[in-house]
Amino acid sequence: ASLPKANSGRAAFEPFEPYGTAARARAFIGAAPRLRAPRWEPPKEPEPRCRRSPRSAPAASTRARQRPSSASPARRSRSPPPRASAERRAKAEPARRRVIATMAQDGLFTKLHLSVTARTRPGQAVLVSGSATADRTAGALEMVTSPDEWPVWRTPKPVIIPQGARHDYRYLLKGGESLEPEPEPGVARRVVGEGPELRVADVFGQTPAPPSSARKPSPPPPPSRLVIVCYHLPVRVVRGVSGAWEASWGTSIIAKSPGGTSIADARETLWVGTIHGGLDRRQLTEADKAEIRAALAPMRCVPLFSMHASKGYLNYAKRVLWPSFHNVTVLDQCCAAWNDEGADTWDQERSGASWDAYEALNGEFRDALLPILRAGDTVWVHDYHLMLLPTMLAEAEMFRVDAFTTRKARIVFFLHIPFPTSQLFCSLANGPKLLAGVVGADVVGFHAFEHARHFLNACTRLLGMPQKSVAGGITGVEHGGRTVMVVVRHVSVETLVIEDALKGDAVAAAA
Image (cartoon, rainbow, N blue to C red; front, side, top):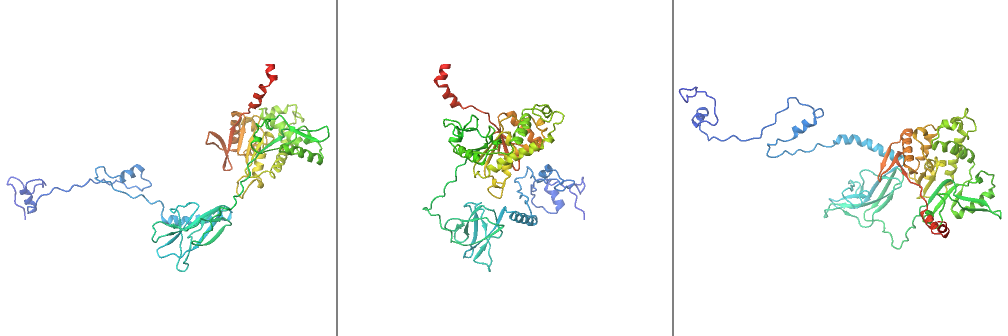
C-alpha cells in the first residue's frame, strides 16, 4: 500500500529530513513518537588501506594507530607488552644451568644448597636472605617443602656464591600474625664456598653464638712496603783498610736522602739490584758475597750477583736499547763505534745471544724478588734494563694470592730515558716483546708527555691495545682485562737540601 500524499503538488516519497515537521515524520513511521537528538559518539579512526606486520610497519605509524584521538574525552589505557614469554624463559633455563655447572667445575663458583628444620604453622613459609640482600627481605628467596619433607625446608634452586668467599645468610618466617617477615633471633649464619657443590643443614632458631667481647682482636696486617728494583744499587761498596767490605749510599736519585727527607723514613723500603763498579762481574768468592750481603743488610739493600751482566747489560741494554731510545736509527747503529762486527756484517738477527742474556737477566731479578715479596707491597721497577720484569712477575704463580689473577703486589715501571717514536721502535726486532713486558705493570711512568705519547702509540700500533681514559684525566691502555695507567712525573730536586746548603757560611761568603 502506498502512503498518502502529504502535498498534492509533491511526490509522496520525498527524502526524509530528520528535523522536519511532525506531519512528515508521521507519514513515514505511521506514529508520532517524541523526537530525540542522536547520541554523540567520537569519530572512529579510518582503517588503514593495507595492513602491515608490526615488524615491517614504521614506528611512527604504529604510534599513530595506538594514540587515541584528541577529541576523545578520556585516553584509553594500554598495558605494556610482555617482556619475555614463559616458553622463552623455559628454553633458556637449561643453557643457564649448563653455564653455572661449567663455572662451578672450573673452580670459580660454588652451588650452595640450604635446608633448615622449621616447625611452621599453617600459612607460614620460610625465607632465606643472603649477603646480597643485606638485612632486606625484598630479595629473600622463598624455600619450599612437601608433606613428606616437612618440617625440612630447602631452597628450590642452588645459591651461586664465589669459591673461597664468605657468604652470610639468615632465615625468616613469613605469614601468620605478623605482616612482615620475622628473622630468626641471633647473629647471621656464615659459610665459605668450597668445591663445586656445598650442602648445609640448619635448625631454625639455633644460630651461632655471638662473638665474645673478651676475644682478642686479630693482629693488623703488616704495613705495605716499597720495593725499589734497579739494575745498579745506589750504593758504593769498597774494601776497607782492614780488608772488610764497607758500604755507603751513593748520589743516585733513588738513593736514600739524608736528613730524614726520604720516603724510606716514612715507609719501610727495600732496594734490590746489582753492585756497580765491576764487583758483579768479578770472580767473587762465596765468602765475599756473604760479607757484602751482611754489609748491605742494615741499609735494607738486597744485592744480586748476576752472571749475565756482560751480554745482557753491556751488549743489549747499552748497545741496542740505549741508542734506539735516543732516536738513533738501526742504520746509524751499523756504523757506530761500539759495533764490533763492522758496518758490513752487523744485523739485529745476529744479536740473539745478547737478547737471550737480557731475558735471563730479567729472570734473575724475578727469582730474587718472589721470595721476599708479601701481600700489599709496591714494586717500583726502574729503567730500560728491566723492561721484561713487570710481566715476568705478574705471570709467576708465586705472585698470585689465589687461583684467580689477584696480584700479591702492585707494580710500577718508570723509564728514565726518552721513549722513541713508534716508527723507530718498530725497527727493533724484539720491540713487541719489550712492550708486552712493560704493560705487565699497573702504572707506567715517564719524564715527559712526549715520551708517554710515543709509548701509547707504540702499544696501539704494534700490539693493538686500545687507549682508555681513566677518572682524573689519566690515560692508559687496555691489556688483559685491566687498564694500565700511563703517567708523567718530572724529576725534581731536593729543595730542603738546597735550602740548607744556601744557609751555610761558606755559601754566604762565596756569594
